[in-house]
Image 1 (cartoon, rainbow over the protein chains, first blue to last red):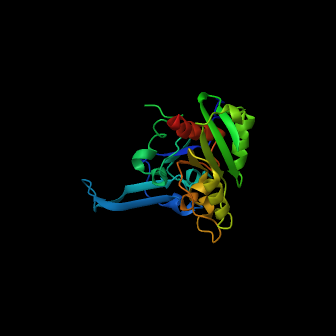
Image 2: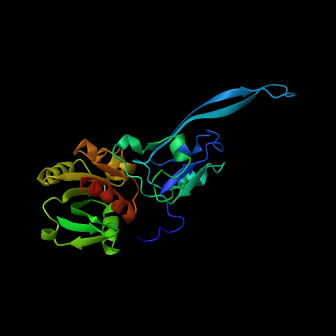
Image 3: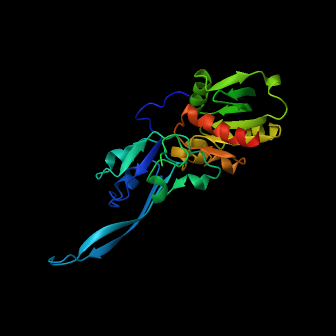
Length: 117
Length: 135
């Protein structure tokens, strides 16, 4: 099999810890394949005058059946939470299996060319 | 309909009806041109070989009946591979007035290959997945 070029656009991984739920990727996506649910929590720190509001990411979904792999979400993310992977081989038997959530997006898909465990 | 052998998995032998409707079809051609899929004589494939309909590209509502005709004309055993975002879901055109939002609204799809376009190697992986399961 031919070597997959470095930097090939096959899959986008999510660093959920870096994501601040700012929604910029969701709004910039040309075909709206990203969905985010989040809520804010009040964090009280000793010595602070008032609690701090922190956004907590509840759901981050990329629908690979819609994605056009343009990379605008990767480009616009101010916190570098999205990264390209060259994994290409993750066909699905059901269309809903192509909706990947936070747990699926942490690493390239299991069984794909880029997956290492 | 053409008969192919998957170069990296010679036991996978498939008859392929390629419905190339848009740019994803170039990746299918690339898979053949780069030797990932090797053309095989049709009579050499044997009666048991799987007949695979590969729909690659944007399906419009005007063309959807033609896709259905192709599927119904395909002899058993058969499988349908949806290749690329447009045939998976309509892709970037999912809210267009004239584009079918996924060929699974028209025919039963065995495997969905994500990509815009998917790599030629992704086509091979999908054919191994459907052809290997049938063999």
